[in-house]
Image 1 (cartoon, rainbow, N blue to C red):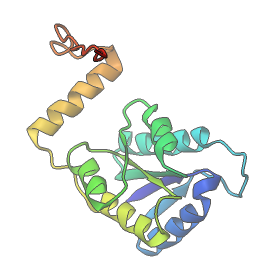
Image 2 (cartoon, rainbow, N blue to C red):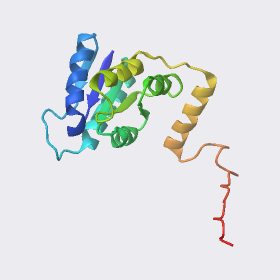
Image 3 (cartoon, rainbow, N blue to C red):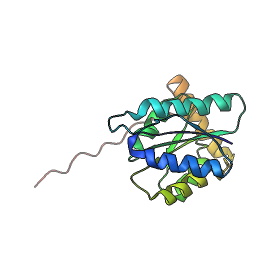
Image 4 (tube, rainbow, N blue to C red):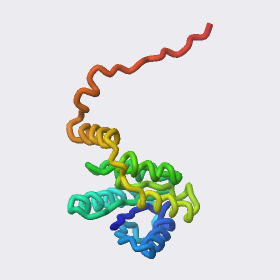
Length: 173
């Protein structure tokens, strides 16, 4: 399996560790950077490049997933999710990593480099990479609705008629 990885300065040490460990485990790693520490670097370009790499590989029929890292993983997940067709999930434990694949068929996992010891982060990433998508109809349907909204701006028959409920603030007596 090919694995695209990207980070910023906050996840650089973890990224280097993951590249080393995953390569030794037989994964084909593609590192989208950065290649050196810069406390002022910006994660969006790195993470978008990794997500684009995953998307391009998958369009060519290759088995490919991605990893994006940062201090919390939040911004990196958001950046990867801006790539059309990519579903990136923030994982903070083994269950969220596995469920991202099982239920959401996420192709990219985001992990906070400042949130986990490197060994724990490796376990989270390995759980994500090893878990297959369940293919359950309900999950396929939901993923389809997200993709439909992404491409059309609506979810046919789902958004019309939905009204938010309002709860006025309580008044003091």
